[in-house]
Structures are given as structure tokens and as C-alpha cells.
Image (cartoon, rainbow, N blue to C red; front, side, top):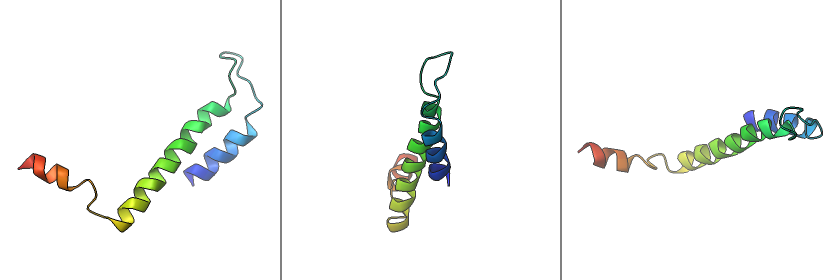
Length: 62
């Protein structure tokens, strides 16, 4: 949901130029697209390997 919404906002605001920075306002929504993709990758990996990155935390506590 985060990816889809951010992507749609990014594409619809790509031609709007911010008066303050001179950059497209879609760059603000690009952060949502990138974070949505990365959250999806982490969730996908955790589905198939649930103990991923948990062994290192247990070793540090011992």
C-alpha cells in the first residue's frame, strides 16, 4: 500500500516544480517508494527465513 500510493503520487507530481528548491515535488514521494520496496524485500526474506538476523542478536547478548 505504501509503495502503490507513493508511486502514484510521485508520478502525478513529477511535473510540479517546487518554488523553494526548484526540484520536482515528486522527490518527496520517492522516499516512500524506496522505503516501500525495501520493506517488501525484508518481509519477503523474513517469510522464507524467519530467523534471519536474529542469531547475531542472541550471540551479542551472551
